[in-house]
Amino acid sequence: EWTMKGFRNEAIAKIREQVGKGRVICGLSGGVDSSVAAVLIHEAIGDQLTCVFVDHGLLRKGEGEEVVRLFRDHYNIPLIHNDASDLFLGKLAGVSDPETKRKIIGGLFIDVFEAEAKKIGGAEFLAQGTLYPDVIESISFSGGPSVTIKSHHNVGGLPARMNMKLVEPLRELFKDEVRMLGRELGLPESLVGRHPFPGPGLAIRIPGDITRDKLDLLREVDAVYLDEIRRSGLYDQIWQAFAVLLPVRTVGVMGDGRTYDQACALRAVTSTDGMTADYYPFPHDFLGRVATRIINEVRGINRVTYDITSKPPGTIEWE
Ligand code: XMP
Image (cartoon, rainbow, N blue to C red; front, side, top):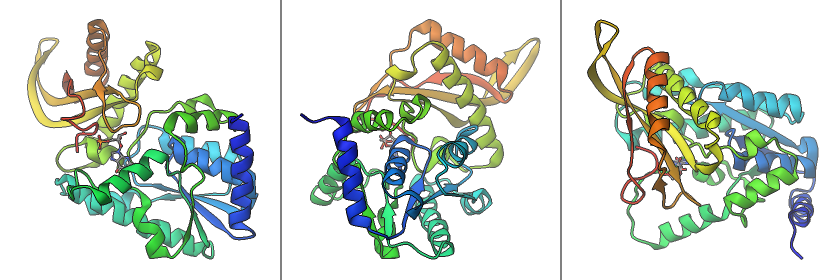
């Protein structure tokens, strides 16, 4: 009989066999997949594993600190925290094209990761939280028509360039199974149940160029939106929910004054693997409440819209 406990033990044995006495580095994003992979590998080989967390300055509110706290303090897993926000935001300044943003971020991520790997004296193995749908997607992409919808930011370019062997203990699992494995490993529910978050982060939720001010504004909107979703008990019914900062200013009225501030869009979808998705049918009173809160609590936003596009024809992210 197949059990998650059995899978865990087998995976640990396989990792030990593959890695031997070698050193492994693992890129942590703060998401479920890389976190589960890291904890599993740490159980298998202990301090032969070093995790690297590259903070590109495009994370949500409080996210960087949370990752560091969990891994360094709670799990005692060796973790390098590279705050590379100046580098990333500097190179992204003035860039509006979505694919250019993605390529800049992907390239810089490799540079920073590579430099950190050198600093620890190199490693033979690179660990990734690749899931089964990722494997399928890349196979069908290479065999299918050569249309790139988006250059997904992951470390696909990394192994070849760094000449490393891959450790991918989650390759046979779907997202819900990774969550089960995370629970089996005792990871906190706040992490295991977390919505997916794209590698390029908030950069692809700000159409147009990216500035620190826009990022700060978006972080505040996103935090209010997610807080309201959690309070309403809807978080676990939703695959992903986030805010998008629109490059549009609109006229409004607050008290007895005129406002001329930015508009934002809210997005929430249901999905099983991210390949297709339906917009989430929030009750209207929820939408009204969250719009009121955002406009009252976030200075600089005076209009809130809800995105009701499914995938296809939309994609989940806006860029
Ligand atoms: P789209 O926008 O393509 O997104 O419908 C599908 C799922 O993938 C996530 N996503 C990414 N994840 N690197 C990632 O690790 C990326 O570059 C990336 N782009 C999109 C997106 O958040 C959604 O869950």
